[in-house]
Image (cartoon, rainbow, N blue to C red; front, top):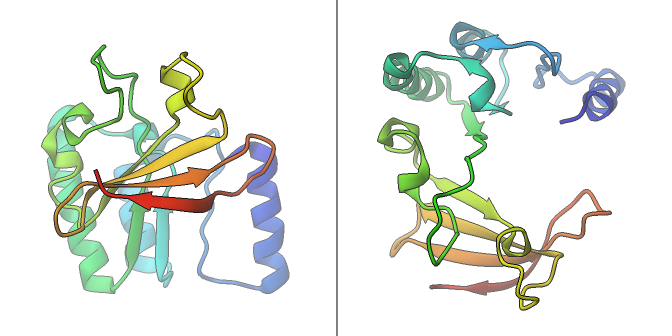
Length: 168
């Protein structure tokens, strides 16, 4: 979220007097204990970790944090969404993200669902793909993984609209 969007959400939270939303300033690097504390103590039903890349974790601590995250969420009955920004994949014929693009299997092994967002026009310059098309790739969580949901996602609209589902 941009700083302006964070302020909008914060204003909305105040307006509706919700206690189920916790916001961190966008410029604050979070410690893993901050996230676990929110899950354990906020009373929120849903927690969104907006940028797992921004968490201050050593590579060796990732697996421990993921176990602790899943345990805390399960114990408190909290749904946790974790957003991670993948690096551009190595050159390959199909540039869609795959589980192997994550730095370690600790990033997905403990999650029930893993979805990727992919905008083909960013990687393919052949004019075949509509610049407003986005794909939701369900990499883990459905019988017979993976599946692709094609969506309409114009850059001037802050929303995503499903328009076709296909299984590949």
